[in-house]
Image 1 (cartoon, rainbow, N blue to C red):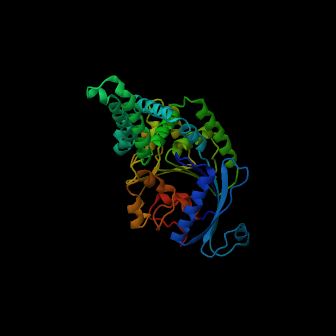
Image 2 (cartoon, one colour):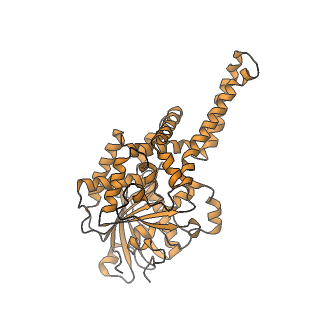
Image 3 (cartoon, helix red, strand yellow):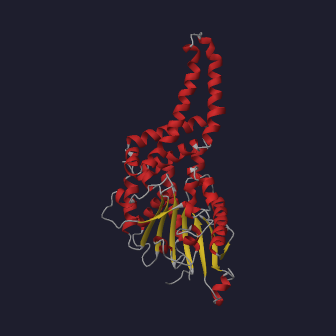
Length: 396
């Protein structure tokens, strides 16, 4: 098998309040963990000044190989690979959705909930992945319960037969309960963050917000420039909500230039994908069409990485067919287990935190495992080898 010497990676992170620099720092930490687990060397370069999207180089090599460009030129013993990572984050949109006052965020969240129900999204979630359906309902049911308790506290004096004047103390008391008791408690479940996540899901499904649409078009233009660089392999990776962003951006490029990837080796890797979070809305016709464009592109190999213990993905669901393209080549599904990537103690520590489990796709491992994000995006083997759990992930 021909090893990869040079790779270009476009990574679309999930819905987190992290900018490109923060995602690069996470990548560097994860790469060090991966190198320690597998026994290879890695060097993560500094961000390139003025790059948009933020980009940096990662050089990996067999243990003892000098991780520099000179190794490539002199043919040093062992293997080496240089990857240019472009972090196509959507932190600007995350900050915009999270930056409003509490009342606005709650109203917008419940409005998104209603829109998803009316457009058949919730029905689709429970039909294809019931745990994802529960993930959808949880923050709204929790907040609705808190609002009901708050209202009950306000009217409690009336229920007890006291005069209306008692609302002067029951009202402020109820407000204090909601602000100083419920909201801090709900933060452990990232409730308001999830409200914003669902608002973005509606925006990417409906495509009826000019600010989101303009941002996607602008990102497509920036990504097109990144693809101008020659490489042995192009990996387009995405995590969670980032998969819907990636589907739109790559779909836009294919609409503009149907043969943009001609003659290139391209792997489209979706990790804990949330494409169907948006695509199951009845109005998401454009997103579903772009899923079809990607699936039918002959140069693109689609790898959909899923995990049973991650409730925030569509486990064993064929995303291409469910998006309405049963006649198109399906994505190759890779089923992984988080417990195989971590020590027993580490796994026990995180397994009850579903958002933390959901992030493990892009985090460093404690142990060698069939899937490793760093090796897929910066290792010497073609990314397509990860479609087979039994294939070697490093040269033997």
